[in-house]
Length: 107
Length: 107
DNA sequence: CAAACGCATGAATGATTGCTCATTTGTTCA
DNA sequence: TGAACAAATGAGCAATCATTCATGCGTTTG
Image (cartoon, chains in turn blue, purple, green, brown):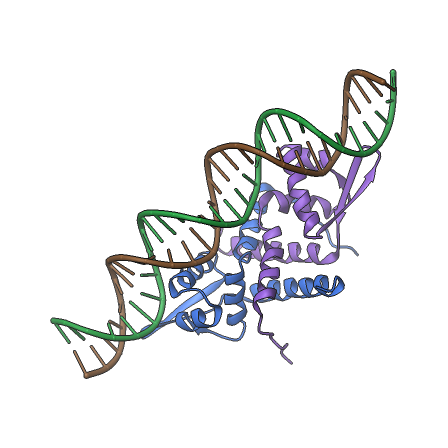
């Protein structure tokens, strides 16, 4: 049986858009991709991902606000990790889509 | 066995971000949500979703460019439909996440 | 305590975005 | 053919965003 498709009200649409918006930036995508491997502290993330520590920190705050990542302090370091599996799954699915699209048009 | 987690290169991150960006707007989310039910022409979409025909048309163009929807002309009408299952799946997954999040904090 | 380290934050700025308005293109029908 | 309808498009504008720079806060260590 085909799943029931709910009609989405305006609030839900806004929340949903906000979720996707959190994933709608290359820097944040890369941050999350790093965190797929396990928790990581800010300056490591900055090294791997590229932009300044400040930029990374700003983006992490956004992800934190959206409850997509958790922060844990240990000494002078703050370790970030993914908040739940949904994020990883969404990223994974998006990745599959992107790879298919770009494979079939040979880009 | 746990899936292998690829390290994401910069281009892939950008493509992935672009995909999520296409879903990162309430209007576009609602458009896609409408199309989950089946194909639909522009002025109907405009009626259901809210903003002007022009605004809807602009957003549909974006979705078209991203190959997330297809357009089919029939007389004066242009019928839009979802390009593939990935979109529907992504939306569905996002929806589940949003509903869980907002349920557990009682919003 | 003071210096150094790790991170967060506020202000400022250039870039991007989503809308409206006006116009254009494509189609049907009187 | 010309009026009316459906949709697309371009210009313009206010709002949002991602970054940098400067600085502040918390922690460790000499």
